[in-house]
Length: 114
Length: 430
Image: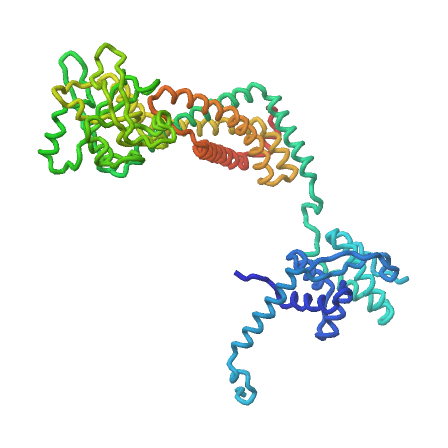
């Protein structure tokens, strides 16, 4: 059984939340991903990923006061929980161990098949 | 202030999970305002519509069966109230059910405990597969055939000499003690010297081979040892056996303690307070000593065999009873179930409704039945010369069995109740 379940997009969202640190809410996360990865993110995909991560207890959220620019709607800020940190660490380590297991020659450009 | 397309906004508000609605709406508004500034109203409206449609996905849509938790405590109270009202409404059937169930449970428990005890009896002997008892059948012309456990003293050396398969032969003689050692010690046995080798009675002190060799030796229970020689080593202490009859007791005299046993914890059909060497009685007599005492137990043993079958039958009958009972009470409530079904109640909620009622009835019956069974069992068992351990584990096991039977009965009934015709039931005037 897998210890931590973290999909590709979910991982991207987790990392972005970590980058934004105290300023991670819906729009800022969306923009950050779009600018850093150069890919379009729909509000729906992002929000459902955020909800999934929150259901898994990898993220915690709290609402901050409503502001004028959002027509009186509150912002929901996200934070990574310690379980979330563990999940990220785990994902990173498994990736690294896979990278380390690749024999040098396999990815050597000189020997790549054309 | 620009306004996003209002039908889409309304649509979003309608489908969105209430916990997510406000912050996501905020995000949508923020994006809309920004796009409005940069791209103009038409593009911003377009993107807003797309966002809303892309938000329409399972994890964002609110669940169909409501998002607010019911007040569980309130529901529990309400359900209990309903159950009691149901009991009150059908007072007679409730009482009959309750009495029937409690009696059924109590008798089930009684039989179960007894059979369980009988099945486990004498299982502690290590050689249990190789132990045999020699019986003697007496045939008379004018009396029924009679089987006795008593045999001639002469049989033991004869058997050992003649039958190669016999490893050990232990004569056992038991008698109500008319001699007095202390008050209430009446279970006395005279046994052959290999008694502790053949049977696994728990000899605490003394050697298995030696304790019953000397004619003047006596082996006593831990209970007696504690009573007479508290804090001393009982081995080597002497007893004087007093005869309180007119010289009938042939074993009056002095004895020296050679061993101590403790059989309190063993589930044994043989019970004794102290043992004397059988050799005391072997001189010039072979008169059986205990004919009437054994007859009592012989009949008891026959009942045990029968009761194993009866216990099975009792369980089957109580299953049928439970089945009829649930069937009756469900039929009475068909209309209620029908209305619930019409209003969209799921099968699971009907199962819960029925089993809630029923499990309350069962638990009340358990609360009444088990103590009754316990009390009867205790008093009844006191009539036996031997004692049984009433362990809570037995009650636990029987409790689980009872619940399993109850669940089975409910399940069968419910399987039936999901099939009946709703419209028929609602139309009828019953």
